Length: 428
Ligand SMILES: [Zn+2]
Ligand SMILES: [Zn+2]
Image 1 (cartoon, rainbow, N blue to C red):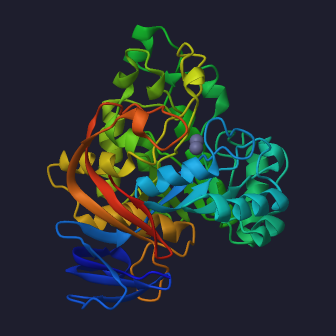
Image 2 (image 1 turned 90 degrees about the vertical axis):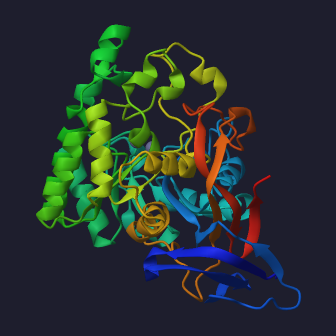
């Protein structure tokens, strides 16, 4: 296997609190050596990383790769290509496929296919209930044996507290995190955006923040009783941040993620009926957006995940209320996060950014990723943190093009991405 020597970069590894100028050597798929200066060896490819970060490959614990069943939106191959172009080397795919990933056979099938077809490592979050119908828990022991790293009914949140409680007890027994999209459907029925001044002005039905917070509170209380690890997906409300702060202080095993779009955008992005700004949970108020930012800065929010949700152009071309929820995230996440960071009065340090996008999410899902430790798999991204580039949706690797960041100038891009020491992406 070809060896690579990355030279003159800024080595960033939150797992070791490492932030230093230096070189990194990869050999036989692993990180072989890190030092202030390494001498090239025969046959080794040297890559100059001056002015760049050398970081553990980014980890996205919330993506929709649409297989099986919806390969017209995305495939393991195109989703994997989008991931490595965005600097990601590990992703966790959600089970709301057709059929849903609720059996060990389907979990194994996706894992095996992904190993062959995706340039990025793929982990599976299996369904929390059979058929994602919210009625009966799955066989968690079998799902774990098959390789599932967590369970979730993401797009179809369990409405019954009793079913959720049983599912949590089952997952706790096998140490599987319960990953939840918090939404009380009785509060959000028929809504296509956030309930506020903009939805009133547009004449669209909106979902109030309580649609999210009521279920965050319910799930956190159930997690407290059952002892499971509860992970809250795509937090979107100011009150949600406060609830998680409260339950963490109570000692509940609760963690949460926020998406780049909820950190950068508000419901104002829907004002022109742009269906690429339609997702669930919806973009909310400026007060919510600002509170999410504070939640990240204060460490209440553990990590950033994209909720990469590809939809075909013909689906997003429908009128706003009929268009499906969801936007792309993998190829714009890093640039969005560094843009968001650049707007802060006191921006986060590069090490903190890498933690939010790699080390912290890897730890939450128990993945062998997110570190530059010698001996670890050589899943590495070389990032140019200063590159300003414009999003051209036609150039995205994803099979779909639904991004609200089309035409935006973002900051920072993955220059080279390595998975197990193999160069899987180089920026043009
Ligand atoms: Zn969701
Ligand atoms: Zn999702």
